[in-house]
Image (cartoon, rainbow, N blue to C red):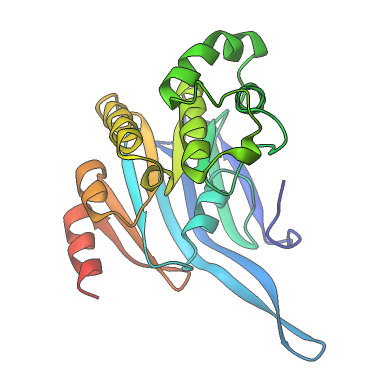
Length: 248
């Protein structure tokens, strides 16, 4: 597990009972910093995120937009509990199961797709027998039948995305966090994965999507969070935020 620098005294990862809160995750004045060299033997923190506050409510689909390098992926890693804040507070509902789908996360390159699917399912909380019983459906959804027993090191980015997405769908997380995974792969995969997210929206399941695709954001998201320079520039109803973002 990675941590964004050593945890400081002011950093808190707290938990509250889901019966006491409407929110699944609540961020309050959160900051994430990394060390950077500013001169010979001189270092100062680089704040990838600073003073971030918002909540994710059960049943909503939230989009996170912004240019490359503004902190969107760092924000998803924070929400998935991979890293903790260097300042501020993160509250999470008890027993919250989050799954982060990212091209940077996840698989052991030397193992096969099948082995990685089983390990990922177990890591995400499914009993081994349960994930093994789902493996044929996972392979079918990912359309990797002829590649599933080859090492993941031989997979393209799109193939890894298809496998990760398929595993996540069978884990059925409380919050699905998607970091641009839908944008890779072929057109058939994009249609299939978008349809699955539509089904989550209809079923009032919670999803957070980082995307550069304006049409995808308009179609799927209840609201948007626009990140710029590690801070929230605008947050609210999808059309209003997207219209402002696209004219900048």
